[in-house]
Length: 76
Image (cartoon, rainbow, N blue to C red; front, side, top):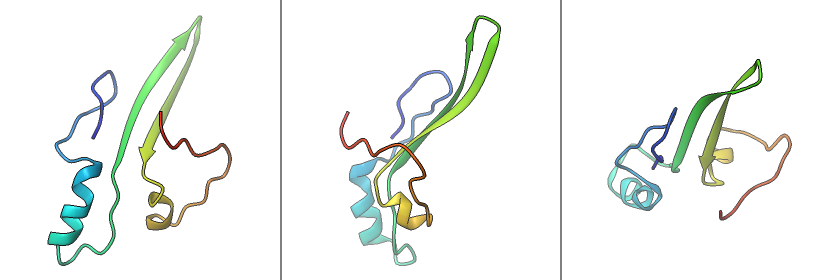
């Protein structure tokens, strides 16, 4: 579920819906909740665009990813 704001959108499904969907959908074997938002930040005359993705840790397995640098944030 996303949070409102510039560059973000809100959808009707969230983390709590994942088990329900996995239990009801015959063709879906794995799933996870995630939210992403993109925005541009301007300071002085510099402009940087970026995307932030928030997801359950199972996203790494589902998309065959490894954490390249940084750390996991478990609760904010």
